[in-house]
Image (cartoon, rainbow, N blue to C red):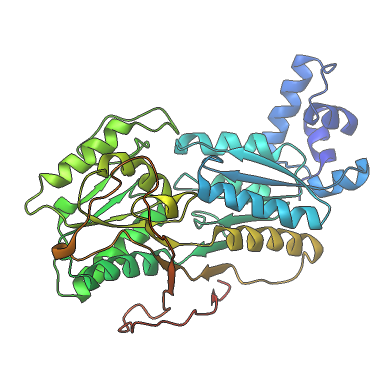
Length: 391
């Protein structure tokens, strides 16, 4: 394992100077700083943040990195991490990575240099191999999306099963032409939900139609549909949702129902769907979803549980470095049935105004079963967590 002394020898400086460079001491000469930085890169040196915490006497700090802290799903995860960290007397630093995958490595590198003791991250890129050196020094735990190019702990919702149960719910209401609207199909969550949607159609004897699958309703980067214009990273472009809905309406035949693949997509679609008669199931609950008119049926992923479990794993890894843990934990999702689903013959108008509609909006909760191919009865018991063995 590379030490600070190794860096000092290669850079021909003292270990104290290496420490000053890493801590961004302004009194270090530029040429010395460059020489030390080159040595760090050449040796792959990463400081032991936990040891440095003990030396300085400061409380340990847990980092949280998500695509967008303003997204209700990721906001709940961050809050859950904070709750666990507070009980362990740890501080928390939260960072938004943005939706441009090319920013991930740099943003995480900057965050990890803040003397973190551990990191909980929901990645945005297709390869997390850049975290390999850091993961050898401190616990890096993934949430919502599994790592690629890196072996690490991950806590995930059952995205495939959620896509299945959302689609099956619409099929049970008599729908046959069901659209799917998602973010970027290269994102693992969107891909798994799309696969579940297609599986439900095939199991019902229905042929999935490419004309009813589209992406990029809120203008994320990397979305690949006919609406090629992209909003700035993290921004919402309402015209994209209108284009997506317009494209689906022109499909032959057009859909009578729709599965939205994530909460941000659903929230962006609401104005574009206003006045339509499509039945809708959204993936991911969000504030005010139950106050829409009609109240929105959703697949709930329980982000608080995901955040709690991820943070607890970081603390477990710090407390027992040699212990073996299961690498991947998949938690069940559940259908929260409200009022946005109906049969084609008994359709209603979606979101007629921006104000909540009159009448009750009580929810009925139905859990997804872990058996993706079993026939689902009307009442479905809540399954226990699905654990996968350590690779």
